[in-house]
Amino acid sequence: MESNEGEELLETSSASHTTPEKAPPFTETLDDAWIDNWDMKVYRCAYCNRPFVTYDRLLDHLRAWHSDDSPKIAPYEGPSINPRAHPGSIVVIAQGGDMFLETPCSPESPWATYMNGMVQYQVASQVLWIASPVFRKMFGPESNLKEAAELRRSQVFGTPTVISLDDDPQALEIILMALHHQNDLLPQVIEMKEMIHIAEICDKYEFHQALKPIADKLFLPMKDDAIKPGNEDSLLCCYVFGYEDVFAEVSKELILRGAWNPGQGLHFELSEAGTLSSSIPGFVVERLTRVRKSHVESLRKTIRGLYKEPNSQEEGLRRPCTGGNHREECEALQLGHWIQSAAKYNLNDDEMWNQSLRSISSQLKEIKDLQCSWARRLHEVVDNELDSVEGLKLSDFSSAK
Image (cartoon, rainbow, N blue to C red; front, side):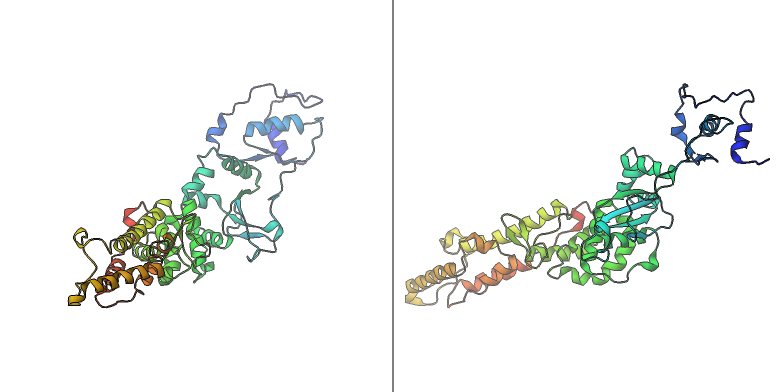
């Protein structure tokens, strides 16, 4: 006689049990207390492969559908392994992982040929929620969110769940390889732009601590590039991973280099977007704006006070006239020089003062220094103002690190 798992289970049931002609409805109230302490073990029917979360429910199923003379039941077909995956678009980070992270890719990316412009990474969910407080809240063991419910369902049916993100795919892949200890696959050198994307993702999902060693390896060798025009958003890397010295250097450059656009705020001519990344905290950008404004206002106040009465000035710019009997003519010459300079360099227009601090200073130093002129002292004031510019201190903020 053939023996199988189903028959062995049936032997444990009551001998007096009579099988009905059709499957009866379950009239008893099922106890769902097992949910609170379920060990995630799944019991499968040996006949139709249906899954059950308790042994008792499997027995009920066998009695109802797989006893002698019981009605036939169609074989169980679970969901496909990953119904949203596109052939060839899966990057396996963790073989046998229980989750797919899905993110769009641009036409210029290496994944541009994939269907619907999406790329998926097969990962281990536990690795993600251990490293990220954000993912822990989303689908960790104590989460009640939709993503957590889908993940638990997928673990029952053996079908990895799909989580949709909206992040740079290349940066995301580097992060996922690092988290899954695929260190031999990590690049040795990357561009600053990609490092900034990594910082954005780490800040978004709070991977700061987990990725710090990798950030040290990738960012610190190219920290000198952080202050170059076009790399303004490198400030985010410094903030996220706690590089205090580089943060001060980059922020000083931004104060000197940033122009003011009334509609956009701080503007950087060589930056790809023209403005700072929205991932940089607003309070950091506000501090940069405030410090820049204080230095610009200091120079503008100096210009406005050029021809006030000497006794009303805290520190006059004009040197004593050495022309002897020609003092009035000298005063007229200085006044004419001021009027001419104000017109030539638009010293009374906001447009002039909306430029970067460095550009403003450069134009003020172009004003010619005539005999007995106020221009030489102005040049000294400009130099002193530039020398007084200091970068921000990371310790003044609640750093992401």
